[in-house]
Image 1 (cartoon, rainbow, N blue to C red):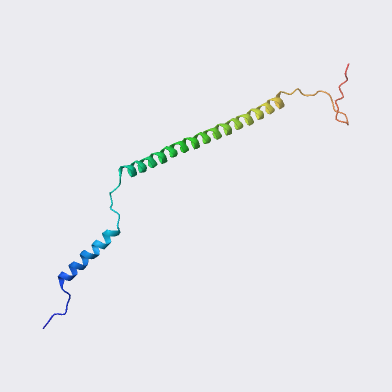
Image 2 (spheres, rainbow, N blue to C red; image 1 turned 180 degrees about the vertical axis):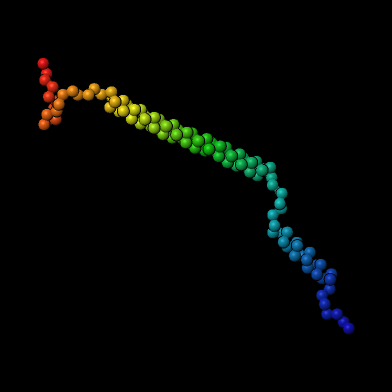
Length: 108
């Protein structure tokens, strides 16, 4: 009986050849030059710096809007209090009003 199967050494040769072809087109994982690393970290630092700057601006705008809202609310409360005070402390008219809405108090 003769075997018609594939020789094991032929399979090993094929796998070595396929690994060489695959490595030929792949990029080495950690082969970065110092210039590219400087560029990467500079971009990272610039992004973090911009993020901090943007966040501080947004917080400042939010704080200013809150202060403006509080000021407007206090101003409206003050105007309401003034109106109530004026209504409460306004002297009452003692004369009667005529048909035309004018006071009938004589002017001497």
